[in-house]
Every structure is written in structure tokens, then in C-alpha cells.
Length: 99
Image (cartoon, helix red, strand yellow):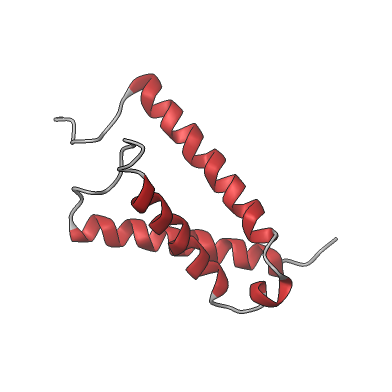
């Protein structure tokens, strides 16, 4: 299969994945640090997820990082939905019963 523009393979791809997951974990910690009244609102998690993605989209070109600049509408909507889900999961984790 032909490699897409911005697609990485091998060690570079592994490094990108590790950075993505590390940033996601840091983002989760940042969400946990938000004031509790904000986190009590049902929309805070999904909005937070979209803001994380929007921030990356705004800064990735400046840092010469691979991003979705050339992606089609469907791919961009899928990535946005993925980040809404990320925020929803952060929000639902807060609601989990504490042991």
C-alpha cells in the first residue's frame, strides 16, 4: 500500500504513538486538575477533548509535526469524534464509584 502524506512507519511511528499516549495521560491529569464545579457539568469532558485536539491542530504546523491538515472532511470528523469520546471517558471516569 502507498504511504499517505504525513504517515510514519517504524521507529518514528512508535515515537509518535508514545508521545500521543503520553500527552493523552498528561491531558487526563490536567482534566483532573480542573475545578470540581467545572467537572460536574456533563459537557466539560467532551469540550475539553475538542480543545485538546484544536490546540494540537493549531500548534502542529508550527512544530512541523504530522497532523490532519490534508485530511478529508470524514477523517477530520472521525478525529474530532475520537477526541469527544476521550473527553467523555475522562468525565465518566470521575463518576466511577470510589473504593
